[in-house]
Amino acid sequence: MRLGKFLHYWPIVPLLIVVLVAREWAETSQPEIVKEDTIDMRETRADYYLEEFTTRRFNANGSLEYRITGRTLAHYPGENVSEITEPKVSLYRPGIEWHMESDRGDFTEDPEVFTLHGNVVVRRSADSESEVLIQTSDLQVLNDANEVQTDQRIDIVAETWHLSAEGLQSAIDEGKLVLQSNVVGHFESPSQPTLDQSLGN
Image 1 (cartoon, rainbow, N blue to C red):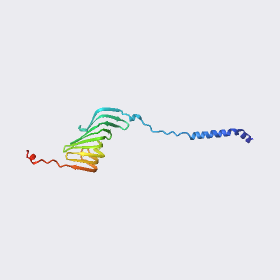
Image 2: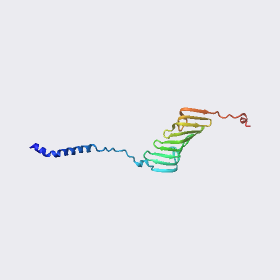
Image 3: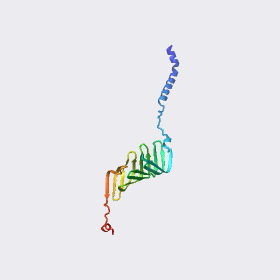
Image 4: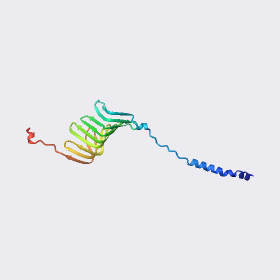
């Protein structure tokens, strides 16, 4: 009797097997959905833009600490960075000033860091020394850390000497230049007055 019932349903058994196999294949062959990282386009857009701008910072005593000017400034909130074209940065400390300019630059806050890129020219003047001209391709100014630095090739020109080197570090308020490596220098003796000049003739 049981065998008869089995034989009665036998024609649909292959169909059931096909259905089960197809279901198993469909469940295992579903493509895995990988969630990709998305970019918030709002963070890649400038939230404000300035032209021909000037910004200043004063210290607790009311003395000017630095001044920044530039042709354009675009601020990006995602990284809290300002991109500047043709920046000019002037740093003021007692007895010493730094005046810098370049093709472009970045400015970040907390900590305050100015990064200058392309044809960087620095003029450093101190009360007790003649002006020094520094040229390089990139330069960082760490205002909160009181430091100027670069690991690029630099050329330094003063009234009676010329130095080239790889890398520079200096405290902003001291102005002492620390050269990192491959230093080559050329020095000239100051002009000595002739006898006629010393006698006033």
